[in-house]
Image (cartoon, rainbow, N blue to C red; front, top):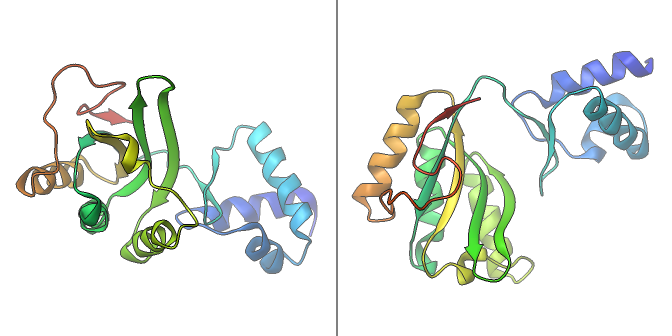
Length: 181
């Protein structure tokens, strides 16, 4: 398969799913290094391909995005993340505002309970550290979904469970706001 055709196929494969370099290499019968180079070329040509802990994913162009300011006990991180994914959301990231370092952000790209569970297990086994410990005042999650109504449902459920910190005007970015993008 020629390089241009292979890169088109990569874009098709990454629509709506996360695949790592080895998985892409196997499906396209090339080396992982070829995939890494193809991803770099695709990004240079304007494709928004995100790198996550699980692999690569193509950024969705027609999704709604909202940032939620939340707080929960450490024991409730998994149920809180499940609120997002159960309503059809994808937890794009987490960020905190540190007094010394400013904004500290980590990409998550969690879109179902299995991924949430794997993320929580990685924190509990010590392979990953949670930003939760840095955020006495709460933290923020950027969440995308197909519709504004899904994001409204998330806000409603977060509020009902006591996780949502209501907008005070001091949030960064579009916290609590809406963005189509």
